[in-house]
Length: 248
Ligand SMILES: [Zn+2]
Image (cartoon, rainbow, N blue to C red):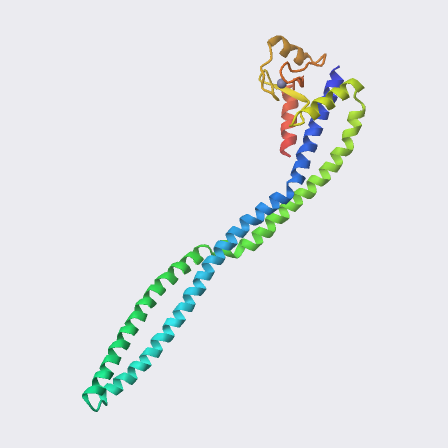
């Protein structure tokens, strides 16, 4: 029975790995879309600052143009003022001069506000310079990493699926059908559950001490009284080996 139990444990590990790989491949499009959305969010926020900078620079050029135009008008108005021939001409030129000076002052106030805003934007662009210059590369790297991982998953899946049936074929028919029934019944695909800390690791039901001992002996197939999965007890060193395999 020990050898058959070991086959069942192997089969379970294999099937769980197949499940994990298939799930990884099935969710590839979603994960890729999430990744691209994340980068697009960064790119959008960078574009937004750059647009603000462009807008402020355009606004500044407009203000400079207005100020320079109004200064030209003011010079002309000043000349008119000096050469005024009568009271009426004098008053007209005076009003014009006043209006232009006010207009110029208003544009200069706007220019100051514009300069402050532009300084802030440029400071922000400066502080995010690294992020801005590396964003495209980071996006390409992240997508390449995702693709490489998927390719590895495909290779692993093909290899593991190939070996899986060889193990399955060596199981006695009754155990094979019990395994299939249990695996298909549960949503997590677990038919063979390890006993961890005295409990079934699939349903967390605590095992009676007598049952724990029987599982530990491994001389017969013991099933969980709660979830009916086949139970096994992993010796400590096997656990360590599986754990390090999982990390590799
Ligand atoms: Zn259980």
